[in-house]
Each structure stands twice: as structure tokens, then as C-alpha cells.
Image (cartoon, rainbow, N blue to C red; front, side, top):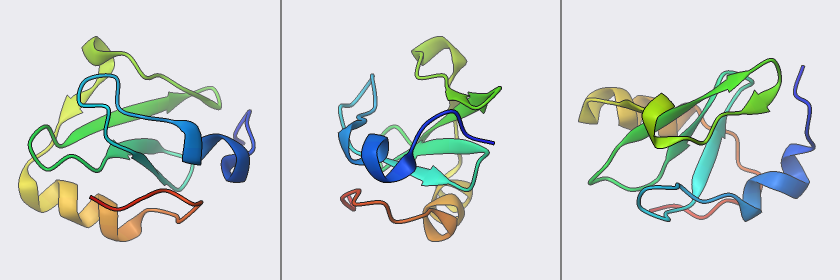
Length: 78
């Protein structure tokens, strides 16, 4: 269970590295919409962990697959 309201929080969040909008993927992670960095940020115990050192760099294929699965809570696309 998420410890935040996606409809309120997601539109405000940005990638701490590229400052691109983030997209929520279920209750598992956030993914940056920036194609250059392709970062995935975990959600731990219901809270987003938006730290560069906790991010995972995805292959382009995995990044696109996550973006396709992402929920649309007012986030912008890349």
C-alpha cells in the first residue's frame, strides 16, 4: 500500500538527476521520463526513494516497457 496519494503527489515529482517528470509504475517504482538517463526509483514500505544512489539505470527496452505500464496521474510524457 502506498503511503501517499498518487493523484496529488505524482504530478509534483521530478527526477533528482535530470529533473524530468516521473511516472508511477503500479506500487513498485517510479520511472524517469528522461530517455538519456532511463532511471528507475524504488518504492520502499510505501514511500518513494528518490535518491540517485538508489536508482537503477534501465536498458532502453526495459525503460520503454515500464513507461508503457506506468499509471497516468497527471504526469507529463517525455
